[in-house]
Image 1 (cartoon, rainbow, N blue to C red):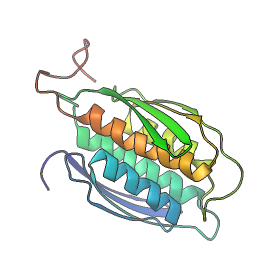
Image 2: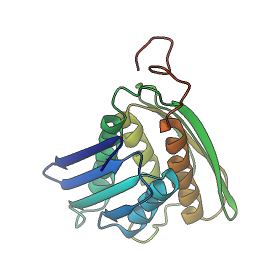
Image 3: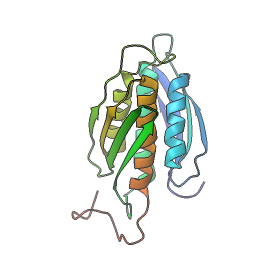
Length: 196
């Protein structure tokens, strides 16, 4: 691979997660978490972010999906942080609105090096396949923390939980792609501090 890449293998007593990320990729995705809906959402991040992304995860799904979902988000966040390096020359901030049928979502990112997440979306308690939509917020929070970024996400309106989640993950991919893009006019890091 060329470009900004990272490879992370995270093993705990609950999960085994491998992530290979190329920020400057072409939307090639190979994602297997054991949770079909989560795979579907992460494919959207890769596809709409134009990232090459491999994720192989196994975990204690006999208990529930929480540990696997969280640990994949942690590992993906670590990979994004590592791939961006010193964050030299990036645009740093970006936002994206995405519609999915009746739903509208917005994601705003600042690859500032300072982790923070504001998540504003409501989901019903009903599961989507084997995935609890209540975990969407946890994915965004874990990703923001471990990628060291400021991440705001909201669903402005919508009825269908699948559509709301899909709009959020698509918007996440598009916002990350735009924020991580190299600005040819930028010399050094995009901060008056001189460091991110």
